[in-house]
Image 1: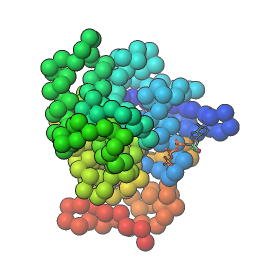
Image 2: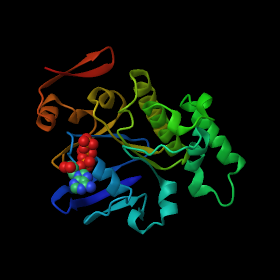
Image 3: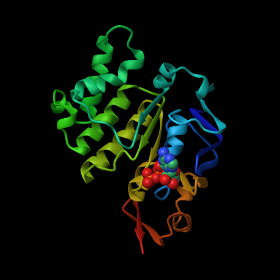
Length: 250
Ligand SMILES: Nc1ncnc2c1ncn2[C@@H]1O[C@H](COP(=O)(O)OP(=O)(O)OP(=O)(O)O)[C@@H](O)[C@H]1O
């Protein structure tokens, strides 16, 4: 078990946002967190990564209570990519190398540099290595922050809508890469997504959030037209083209 979330609740001063959230994931899981705008998906990721302090509940990473780990220890275990990332005047290579920060004592080692190069290669970003982040397109910047989280070599990746500003090819590529690293490196990923087709095609676990609570959780069996309709208020039908499942609003 990589992550176990127990009875989590978080309120903003004027409203309760998430409540009674409990689930766990294992090595190799790619969990898609789904739900309408404002359902509480980003808040959940922020509570897991301690960006926000939940009012109730606990988060365990392996057997450690996340709230008791130092920031550095937490950063070795969790790679988090927020929905909106600042784009500073840093080169792509340096931005990715920053992912190694929790491991670096005095200066980056040969291993840190090799990991940064490897991740750039995996994401097809090598030719961008010396370009500045603030001179890249939104989608290119998004790939770079995902690369930085991968360079961190965490046990758990938390990605908040990682494909939202990517074109079709890059959406598929990034989803494939997440799936591949999760399986090959025996880590886990929790990914908030709006594209049900991408989720159903690449993820293997699903958390459907409605009004801050878990409406349904499990494998592909929970992605039924009934559950989707109850969560999104849209009637859908699910069919297959070859092996690929597709969700079609009707
Ligand atoms: N800083 C804040 N102060 C008060 N309320 C907030 C704040 N941030 C988010 N909220 C509210 O909390 C609720 C959940 O927000 P959250 O960002 O977690 O939703 P989400 O499911 O990630 O939405 P989206 O799909 O649009 O990104 C929303 O109603 C939102 O308006």
